[in-house]
Length: 127
Image 1 (cartoon, rainbow, N blue to C red):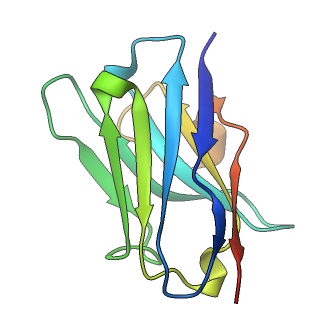
Image 2: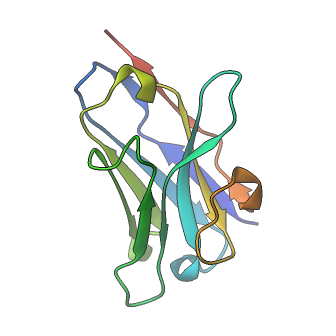
């Protein structure tokens, strides 16, 4: 059974940074698409960033325009962990974040094409 467990959310001021982590278990992690999504209350779950890697490669990444240049997605296959480094945070970034895995490539855009989800980690505005 595939499990994804996020951590790293919390309270942050505008301009601050956070690093989210997602530990995966239950399958061979190295050759799937992994993504970070976020969801504001009453809105659809939107992709923030995604990464697809095969063993030995550095990975193909995608970023939504709203976070490009501020967020960085990465994965450590040896630790079965996905990361999202978030810098220069804005008030609109303070929502619930989810990690997800898709068994297809290239990485899908829509949330309904992802097979497994974590429980989410909340980023809140402390301003």
